Image: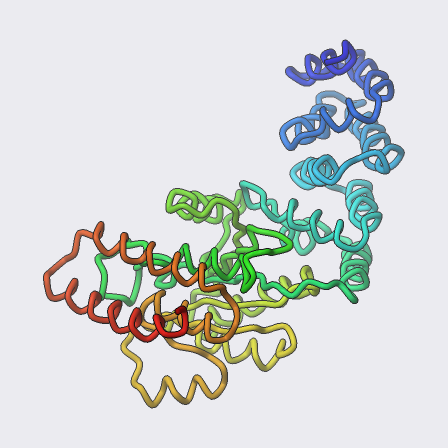
Length: 392
């Protein structure tokens, strides 16, 4: 580590005064490209862009730092550093200058590198993800549209054939509301392996991994606490890389408003990732069937499949009618994986991973009753037998 880099980190470790701010700016200018990229991780970029606000001259010096790091030397930033600077601008008091800097950082990146940058930004450990950046933090509509236009233009001709997985949470990942077939709070056997198999695709050779976004009607409060809590619950369950698009208090008023908010969020997702296809996972208890059918109507060229986890014992005839609209119902994730294998969305290895994870999870569940366990094991064995022929 150079002396200059060490001094920058030392200055950023505590509140800065007027003299220190000027010294910090001079040191930043003296860093070479390698040192600048070494400095700019998420924490440091956030601290750097928020450290210069402690007296009357703070905002002016903060603007000078934005111009230096995000404009004058933007061409020297690698993708991780560029994403970190975007994060620092996003979490602070963005303002018009910050929004212009964010747009410049995004619009200077093209092709597959832009896809990678978007994925880095989207996999934040908090609610400051790509959807929050573009549709919440970029208040200037002209700047927002400039970013969206650039994203759309760069997606044209991109050879991405894999899907982004969009998933509900309650009764899709965890047994929470309408499902009485499992003990409350159970992580559904095989669900994480199924999401991973969809992420890996039919050839197990994806352009990117971590292509998993959870879409929920739950509201996000001002500080993002609800959304962050959802993230922590999912990560404790074993989901390493994820983003969450949340709802609002009004979206919980009815099934129609819940479905409407999810569709609005997914429409945002389509604008942010036009180069990807989509797979939607939901359940039969909270309007997700309506969401799935609307997705086929509104984004037919982008959709791969809609998988509905049946938690309300939907009849055979109703399932057949939904299947005619390419909305596939399943009782277990082994059954969902069999359908995905038939549709060419996952590999045989992916299907086997779902089977293995589900079988192990069934052994670890503390069931409410013997009847409950027997009923679910019977469905598992049925779906295993149906899928085994295709996977052989």
